[in-house]
Image (cartoon, rainbow over all chains, first blue to last red; front, side):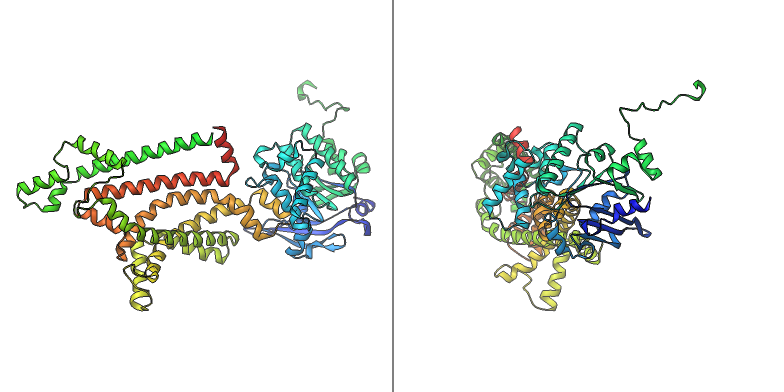
Length: 287
Length: 310
């Protein structure tokens, strides 16, 4: 990693909306705390998309959870700062975080069908978010919920508000989750593998939707994925993670065409491409 | 159609009641001669014959069965052998006491058990959790008669705070209700804890947290209704224990309720009364299970959907 890249990734300067600095997270195990994030640093500029890529277990999801203070009960942040609009979320109390979650920062998850409560209607859950963070009256909340479902492209939104999650497909449920995350027009959307559980055609629709909403709301997106095709589609900046460390970070255009770190090159080489013939492996005897 | 499914369940319930009516009839007829128990084995033959005729026991067994079943269908459970009054009257006189004790104990156990279960789940593996769970294990493993006698020793004999027997005042209710309620609290606490632990780790609870829902609302509005399904199943099953428990507790605390009536009826081989109590109990159980099914559908939209499809 060059000095210039380190700057691009970690030091958005005062311009950064979110800036994670030296974040170290440990998980309690039978043999004490084991660090799974080691001094992770990256930044998200306002109105842009930063993609965090890496293989399973590289720490990309934990990094996102840590931003909103959503680590599992056995996880603990041991060092580092998480600056959002100049406030250190790592030092914030649970009550302070509750005012930021869903309002300043929205979040969508990998499993949309599991992310909605099966016993409450979609409308109730949408209005709940509005009731937590806005001063809207009940009729206003109902109107806003309807507007949000239209915004994310759900047909027959009036009927859908009264529906339960078991009546939705994965793609439709993810649209609902996006609507809920955007209900209070947050400055930042954290999307933790939001398309991994979806069909390829639905994936493309969700990515288009996110890009459209990003432009419409002027929000930034922190997008976690292991799919470099998605990165090419979405990212302004890329953070490559491996074994709980940032391997390389920088602008997508540079990083995807001229990767510096050997691991990034391996990742890019591992992606099947249509314009390059796949390497053909022959038996040794035949060659 | 929900209506059709409900009718199926109702028919199944009626079948259950009929089976119990029949089994009770068979079991009691196998268990010995009730007239002998009533008048003693030294009684002259004509006295025995008189009583046999009076209670219809001189007729062939199948006739007794048919008239018994048709009687029950019309709400006639026959005459008590020892008391000569209709069995249903004796039960009606004792039932309010049993209901008061049983419901108090049940509500006490439910509130205490579910409350403690939630507290334990939220403090998993901490000292509070261990303490609550020790209480729960103790609660459901201590036999009712033992706990009852222990409480009498402490609160009635040692500290002289509460009456040990009878049911004249509200104070008389406390010890038996606590005895019976502790057992339910123990069971409900364990089931609530495990159901809550499972639900609290679900994605939708994490998602609720991620949108800024405060913890009390996450626990009570997002998690608890989802944990309620297994808890309600246990409630339905535990109603049977309520009957069994009240028999013991009413005996220990000398409460003249249905439980004690049943014990006396069995000792005096009072055919009609035993049959009547067993059948009333089974009807209660069948109704309770229907109620549990209805509550499922009330809580869970997926079950409502399953019903409307079938």
